[in-house]
Image (cartoon, rainbow, N blue to C red; front, side, top):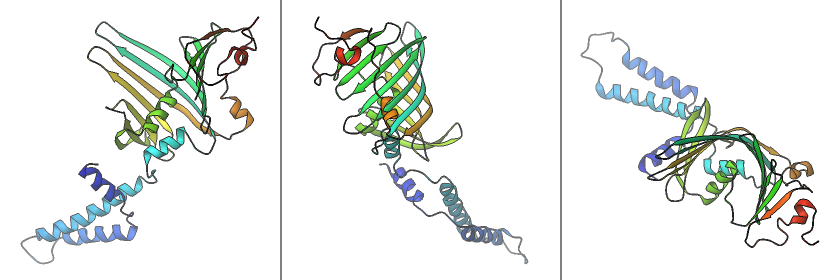
Length: 287
């Protein structure tokens, strides 16, 4: 933590100035600047500096106090919004823009996501992604990932560790869980009081903008830059809500079965019966 951050934290801890304190500061400055009744050489510099300092201090405290309430720890507030520990189901709707630049060309893509996530002893996520008029359902658990392609009517099973998370909120959850915070600062996001948190293991790779009042994400930016290419992924959230842990809400986190679907399983070990053909299609591998 830098010296500036230490000073800022101490100032933010000051109590808000009441109306009486502000009135005293204004009266002190008004008396000092009022025209003298008798001719005199001028205002004493020391008294003027003191009065201005009192008024400035009162104004500073008022401005900071007006920004309350804010989470005491924005990282913890963001983690609680995306992965609450009370068992509620997190429902998010977002749009992601991906820009890929190389020496030869620049390409852009846009996708829409709707996801349902529940944390706990067996965390589970179901994400619906639509891009270029094509839709995928992605189920992520501690045992691995299953992707269902609606157009091709195909399940593809990736055992644990075989496929990185696709859901933008899942990427933010992982970065927050790792806890590599490079910086945090306050800002206004389209007029909404917000925190900007920069995350990354070795260098800043994810920027997370969250609301100050509840920690809900407003925007995430993931960036990967190499000497030859760069990839920037910007996600804007239109809905973040917590649903009660009901049977209907939990059903939204499970991948539906399709009896006539094709089935592909990638190599690798996983939990017993994870992503087996019987659970996804109702068919058996034996004739």
